[in-house]
Image (cartoon, rainbow, N blue to C red; front, side, top):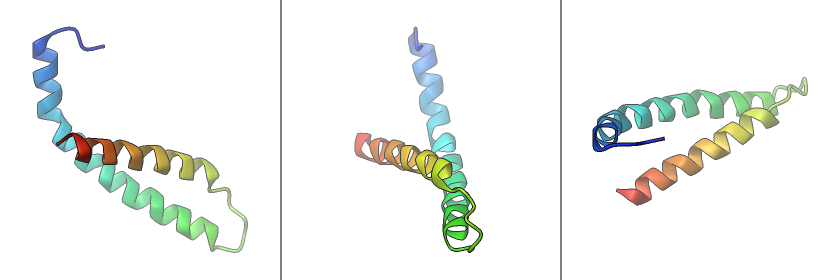
Length: 66
């Protein structure tokens, strides 16, 4: 929980790097989901899809807050 302005300022400094890292992770996750969907050996991809969906939702919220 954020309790003071110093923490808010620190989060503002970290946010661009966190956003960039999340985008890179999503690129890998989304690629893995597609590979699993089409691999023919029924690898489970649904857990990754849930993570991807939540992460994309967070990125959309960040973009709309700018």
